[in-house]
Amino acid sequence: MVTLTMQPRFSHIKTKFLDDGIEIYVPTNPDIPALTLTSNLSKFDKNSRLEIVLYGEKCTMYDCGLAGQEWLEKFFDLKGFKFLYFPSEVGSRSVSTYKPKYPWVSTAGDLTDMVGCANFAPFLLGSESSLKDLNDRIKGDPLKMINFRPNIIIEGTKPWDEDDWEYVFINNVCFKRIKDCTRCPMTTLDPQKGKLREDGEPLKTLQTFRTKPEEYGNKTMFGLNVLTKRSGKITVGDAVYVIRTSDYKKGFY
Image (cartoon, rainbow, N blue to C red; front, side, top):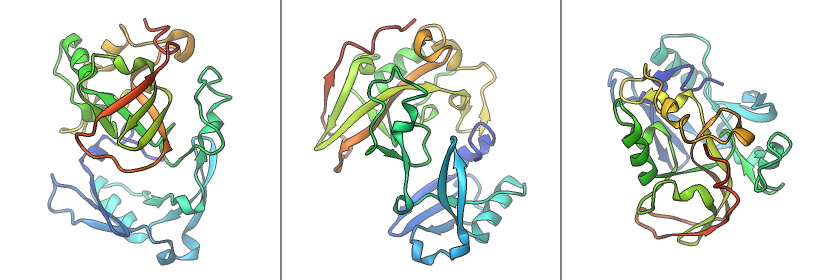
Protein backbone atom coordinates (compact mmCIF):
# COMPACT_ATOMS: atom_id res chain seq x y z
CA MET A 1 0.00 0.00 0.00
CA VAL A 2 1.31 3.44 -0.96
CA THR A 3 0.94 6.16 1.67
CA LEU A 4 1.50 9.92 1.89
CA THR A 5 4.91 9.32 3.42
CA MET A 6 5.97 7.36 0.34
CA GLN A 7 4.32 9.72 -2.15
CA PRO A 8 3.68 13.18 -0.59
CA ARG A 9 1.97 14.35 -3.79
CA PHE A 10 -1.02 12.27 -2.70
CA SER A 11 -2.03 15.37 -0.72
CA HIS A 12 -3.00 17.07 -4.00
CA ILE A 13 -5.64 14.43 -4.78
CA LYS A 14 -9.19 15.27 -3.67
CA THR A 15 -12.32 13.13 -3.57
CA LYS A 16 -16.05 13.76 -3.89
CA PHE A 17 -18.68 11.21 -2.85
CA LEU A 18 -21.22 10.12 -5.45
CA ASP A 19 -24.35 7.98 -5.12
CA ASP A 20 -22.51 4.79 -6.12
CA GLY A 21 -18.84 5.67 -5.89
CA ILE A 22 -16.38 8.55 -5.75
CA GLU A 23 -14.91 11.16 -8.05
CA ILE A 24 -11.16 11.72 -7.81
CA TYR A 25 -9.61 14.95 -9.08
CA VAL A 26 -6.58 17.24 -8.72
CA PRO A 27 -7.67 20.89 -8.34
CA THR A 28 -4.08 22.11 -8.69
CA ASN A 29 -3.67 20.39 -12.07
CA PRO A 30 -6.62 20.85 -14.45
CA ASP A 31 -4.72 18.95 -17.16
CA ILE A 32 -5.52 15.72 -15.30
CA PRO A 33 -9.21 14.89 -15.87
CA ALA A 34 -11.41 13.79 -13.00
CA LEU A 35 -11.89 10.04 -12.57
CA THR A 36 -15.10 8.35 -11.42
CA LEU A 37 -14.82 5.00 -9.59
CA THR A 38 -17.82 2.85 -8.76
CA SER A 39 -18.55 1.22 -5.40
CA ASN A 40 -21.23 -1.05 -6.90
CA LEU A 41 -19.83 -4.58 -6.58
CA SER A 42 -22.10 -5.87 -9.36
CA LYS A 43 -20.08 -3.76 -11.81
CA PHE A 44 -16.78 -5.41 -10.91
CA ASP A 45 -15.43 -8.30 -12.97
CA LYS A 46 -15.02 -11.51 -10.98
CA ASN A 47 -11.32 -11.52 -11.82
CA SER A 48 -10.88 -8.16 -10.09
CA ARG A 49 -11.22 -9.77 -6.65
CA LEU A 50 -7.84 -9.86 -4.88
CA GLU A 51 -6.60 -11.33 -1.61
CA ILE A 52 -4.01 -9.03 -0.06
CA VAL A 53 -2.29 -8.47 3.29
CA LEU A 54 -3.00 -5.13 5.00
CA TYR A 55 -1.24 -4.30 8.28
CA GLY A 56 -0.50 -8.00 8.71
CA GLU A 57 -4.10 -9.13 8.09
CA LYS A 58 -5.55 -10.90 5.07
CA CYS A 59 -8.22 -8.83 3.30
CA THR A 60 -10.37 -9.07 0.20
CA MET A 61 -10.22 -6.06 -2.12
CA TYR A 62 -11.26 -5.27 -5.67
CA ASP A 63 -9.10 -3.85 -8.46
CA CYS A 64 -10.83 -0.73 -9.81
CA GLY A 65 -9.53 -1.46 -13.30
CA LEU A 66 -7.27 -0.10 -15.99
CA ALA A 67 -8.76 3.41 -15.88
CA GLY A 68 -7.76 3.82 -12.23
CA GLN A 69 -4.31 2.40 -12.88
CA GLU A 70 -3.66 4.72 -15.83
CA TRP A 71 -4.93 7.75 -13.89
CA LEU A 72 -2.48 7.14 -11.04
CA GLU A 73 0.40 6.43 -13.41
CA LYS A 74 -0.27 9.71 -15.23
CA PHE A 75 -0.47 11.69 -11.99
CA PHE A 76 2.73 10.28 -10.48
CA ASP A 77 4.51 9.68 -13.80
CA LEU A 78 5.38 6.24 -12.45
CA LYS A 79 4.31 2.70 -13.28
CA GLY A 80 2.94 -0.06 -11.05
CA PHE A 81 -0.04 1.57 -9.31
CA LYS A 82 -3.51 0.10 -8.80
CA PHE A 83 -6.67 1.56 -7.28
CA LEU A 84 -8.17 -0.97 -4.85
CA TYR A 85 -11.62 -0.92 -3.27
CA PHE A 86 -12.25 -2.46 0.17
CA PRO A 87 -16.04 -2.97 0.39
CA SER A 88 -17.64 -3.64 3.75
CA GLU A 89 -19.85 -6.25 2.08
CA VAL A 90 -16.93 -8.68 1.85
CA GLY A 91 -15.69 -8.13 5.40
CA SER A 92 -13.58 -5.75 7.44
CA ARG A 93 -10.69 -6.02 9.87
CA SER A 94 -11.48 -6.55 13.55
CA VAL A 95 -10.16 -3.92 15.96
CA SER A 96 -9.74 -6.73 18.51
CA THR A 97 -6.67 -7.93 16.60
CA TYR A 98 -4.73 -5.03 18.14
CA LYS A 99 -5.33 -6.32 21.65
CA PRO A 100 -2.27 -8.64 21.72
CA LYS A 101 -0.05 -5.89 20.30
CA TYR A 102 -1.35 -3.21 22.69
CA PRO A 103 -2.56 -5.10 25.80
CA TRP A 104 -2.60 -1.90 27.87
CA VAL A 105 -5.33 -0.43 25.65
CA SER A 106 -8.33 -1.43 27.74
CA THR A 107 -10.78 -0.18 25.13
CA ALA A 108 -9.16 -1.90 22.16
CA GLY A 109 -12.51 -3.14 20.98
CA ASP A 110 -14.31 -6.45 20.72
CA LEU A 111 -15.22 -8.77 17.87
CA THR A 112 -18.02 -6.46 16.71
CA ASP A 113 -15.74 -3.42 16.26
CA MET A 114 -14.51 -3.25 12.68
CA VAL A 115 -12.21 -1.06 10.60
CA GLY A 116 -11.36 -0.89 6.90
CA CYS A 117 -8.12 0.52 5.47
CA ALA A 118 -7.33 2.79 8.43
CA ASN A 119 -4.55 1.76 10.81
CA PHE A 120 -6.58 1.52 14.00
CA ALA A 121 -10.01 3.10 13.76
CA PRO A 122 -12.52 4.54 11.30
CA PHE A 123 -12.56 7.93 13.05
CA LEU A 124 -9.98 10.37 14.39
CA LEU A 125 -10.95 13.27 16.67
CA GLY A 126 -8.86 16.44 16.73
CA SER A 127 -9.09 19.50 19.00
CA GLU A 128 -8.69 23.09 17.75
CA SER A 129 -7.48 24.30 21.14
CA SER A 130 -4.86 21.54 21.31
CA LEU A 131 -3.65 22.52 17.86
CA LYS A 132 -3.38 26.17 18.95
CA ASP A 133 -1.37 25.17 22.03
CA LEU A 134 0.95 23.11 19.85
CA ASN A 135 1.42 25.97 17.39
CA ASP A 136 2.23 28.33 20.28
CA ARG A 137 5.14 26.02 21.14
CA ILE A 138 6.47 25.62 17.59
CA LYS A 139 9.07 28.13 16.46
CA GLY A 140 8.57 27.53 12.74
CA ASP A 141 5.56 27.92 10.46
CA PRO A 142 2.27 27.05 12.20
CA LEU A 143 0.47 23.83 11.41
CA LYS A 144 -3.06 23.38 10.14
CA MET A 145 -5.47 20.69 11.24
CA ILE A 146 -5.11 19.02 7.85
CA ASN A 147 -1.60 17.99 8.93
CA PHE A 148 -3.26 15.55 11.35
CA ARG A 149 -6.15 14.54 9.03
CA PRO A 150 -8.96 14.08 11.60
CA ASN A 151 -12.48 13.15 10.52
CA ILE A 152 -14.01 15.21 13.32
CA ILE A 153 -12.75 18.53 14.70
CA ILE A 154 -13.85 19.66 18.17
CA GLU A 155 -13.97 23.35 19.18
CA GLY A 156 -14.57 25.10 22.49
CA THR A 157 -12.53 22.90 24.84
CA LYS A 158 -9.35 23.49 26.82
CA PRO A 159 -6.07 22.33 25.26
CA TRP A 160 -5.62 18.56 25.59
CA ASP A 161 -8.96 18.22 27.38
CA GLU A 162 -9.57 15.17 25.18
CA ASP A 163 -6.86 13.21 27.00
CA ASP A 164 -9.31 11.67 29.46
CA TRP A 165 -12.34 11.21 27.20
CA GLU A 166 -13.72 7.67 27.28
CA TYR A 167 -16.98 8.18 25.34
CA VAL A 168 -17.94 11.06 23.06
CA PHE A 169 -21.56 11.82 22.19
CA ILE A 170 -22.42 13.99 19.17
CA ASN A 171 -26.11 14.23 18.31
CA ASN A 172 -27.34 10.63 18.67
CA VAL A 173 -23.97 9.06 17.83
CA CYS A 174 -21.80 7.45 20.50
CA PHE A 175 -18.06 7.23 19.87
CA LYS A 176 -15.81 5.02 21.98
CA ARG A 177 -12.14 5.73 22.51
CA ILE A 178 -9.67 3.08 21.34
CA LYS A 179 -6.35 4.79 22.03
CA ASP A 180 -4.34 7.98 21.77
CA CYS A 181 -3.45 8.57 18.14
CA THR A 182 0.28 8.04 17.76
CA ARG A 183 1.74 10.22 15.04
CA CYS A 184 4.11 9.37 12.21
CA PRO A 185 6.21 11.43 9.73
CA MET A 186 3.06 11.91 7.62
CA THR A 187 2.19 14.83 9.94
CA THR A 188 5.28 16.69 8.71
CA LEU A 189 3.82 16.89 5.21
CA ASP A 190 3.05 20.37 3.89
CA PRO A 191 -0.30 19.66 2.20
CA GLN A 192 -0.08 22.74 -0.03
CA LYS A 193 3.36 21.91 -1.43
CA GLY A 194 3.09 18.13 -1.30
CA LYS A 195 6.50 17.98 0.42
CA LEU A 196 7.76 17.00 3.87
CA ARG A 197 8.82 19.86 6.16
CA GLU A 198 12.56 20.12 6.73
CA ASP A 199 12.23 21.24 10.37
CA GLY A 200 10.67 17.96 11.54
CA GLU A 201 7.56 19.65 12.92
CA PRO A 202 5.20 18.83 14.54
CA LEU A 203 6.96 15.66 15.73
CA LYS A 204 9.96 17.60 17.06
CA THR A 205 7.83 19.70 19.43
CA LEU A 206 5.37 16.92 20.30
CA GLN A 207 8.36 14.87 21.45
CA THR A 208 8.95 17.40 24.24
CA PHE A 209 5.58 16.99 25.95
CA ARG A 210 3.27 14.51 24.20
CA THR A 211 4.76 11.05 24.80
CA LYS A 212 3.92 8.08 27.03
CA PRO A 213 7.15 6.05 27.07
CA GLU A 214 5.76 3.15 29.11
CA GLU A 215 2.96 2.59 26.61
CA TYR A 216 4.02 3.97 23.23
CA GLY A 217 7.81 4.11 23.47
CA ASN A 218 9.10 7.25 21.74
CA LYS A 219 5.95 7.82 19.67
CA THR A 220 4.18 11.15 19.98
CA MET A 221 0.43 11.74 20.26
CA PHE A 222 -2.17 14.11 18.89
CA GLY A 223 -5.88 13.27 18.71
CA LEU A 224 -7.98 10.25 19.62
CA ASN A 225 -8.70 7.08 17.67
CA VAL A 226 -12.39 6.30 18.15
CA LEU A 227 -15.07 4.02 16.75
CA THR A 228 -18.85 4.12 16.84
CA LYS A 229 -20.87 2.15 19.38
CA ARG A 230 -24.11 3.77 18.20
CA SER A 231 -24.33 5.02 14.62
CA GLY A 232 -26.24 8.00 13.30
CA LYS A 233 -25.77 11.36 11.63
CA ILE A 234 -23.69 14.30 12.85
CA THR A 235 -23.49 17.80 11.40
CA VAL A 236 -21.22 20.82 11.77
CA GLY A 237 -22.13 22.76 14.91
CA ASP A 238 -23.52 19.82 16.91
CA ALA A 239 -22.95 19.92 20.68
CA VAL A 240 -20.40 17.49 22.10
CA TYR A 241 -20.80 15.59 25.38
CA VAL A 242 -18.22 13.30 26.96
CA ILE A 243 -17.79 10.70 29.67
CA ARG A 244 -14.37 10.94 31.26
CA THR A 245 -11.99 8.52 32.91
CA SER A 246 -8.91 9.22 35.02
CA ASP A 247 -6.84 6.47 33.43
CA TYR A 248 -5.58 8.17 30.30
CA LYS A 249 -3.89 11.37 31.46
CA LYS A 250 -1.30 9.38 33.35
CA GLY A 251 2.10 9.02 31.77
CA PHE A 252 2.48 12.12 29.60
CA TYR A 253 5.98 13.57 29.52
